[in-house]
Length: 403
Image (cartoon, rainbow, N blue to C red; front, side, top):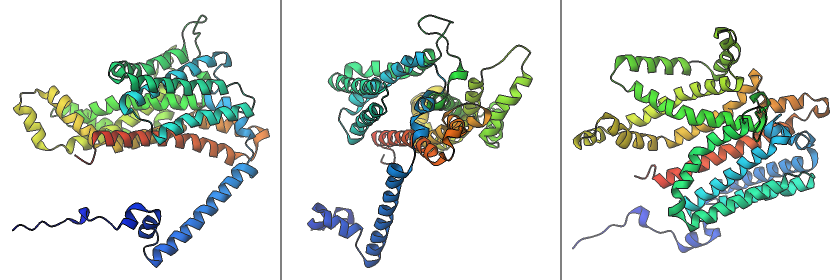
């Protein structure tokens, strides 16, 4: 006769704890007298903070420093006559998001409804402010909805075009935002007119996109058995990691022109982007190296056993597992990189923080620092949370920590 023991995980809680809100509250928040006191005190504190916060937002704060300069926050001094370019890119971005959601997720979720509600709320706000942008926001929502239903209706057929659109989006952004030539359909808009959230996003995206492959190559070089390559990678990583980002930005903006031949100049935005890429790549290399070291030796031996050469072994076996293992760390670095772009304001570039500093210097908005920085903090939080949420979904899809 065999006796089967039930594990602790298989024991179900009482029905009152499984199926009722009161049961859950009793178990998690009011289990003991100390838990009950802590719950009540914490609840009162949260209610007080929320009350004071909403009271300040709705009655005390003066938002003129934000509403009067909303265009500056979003795009800096980018010509108003060329705003259609930015809206076109926003339409395309919304379409791509909708396609990705329909092709890869294929179901509506609470976050999706929130993403659709935000442009509607902003559109109502724009109507109240008598701004014409409300229609463009609704078109963005429409593009996202169309993309979602197309992706859900034809997931197999649209999977490859969606991936191609994702890969081509950044080159299209640069082409459309910058333009070319003195006149015509897309006249040139020099980078000294780029600013605000537009410049912050472009610097962050360039830093993320280009630092990733450079960091992977540096990590592989540091693992190399060739002394020259390994030494170069180690020296680069340790030197860059030993100095703050602001040092690289000052070097690129102020000292690099002294080392260039007469008559040769490099765009200030490009210099800032290169400094950010160099800085992020060094940290990326160490994160990827940690992932490489987590791969068991048996994976290398298995790849050798099936006859793969060094490149094939690394590309198809080792690197995918290493990157999968460090997704949370990489996304955390991407979020930090996005926020670090605010440092370019210290070297004269008018990113989101630089625009805010310029607006606060206006005598009409003296004393409005709290409103301006609260608005900027909200923008940074929204984009940071979006990256964090995308990371969580990717980890769930790949089974990070589960298999």
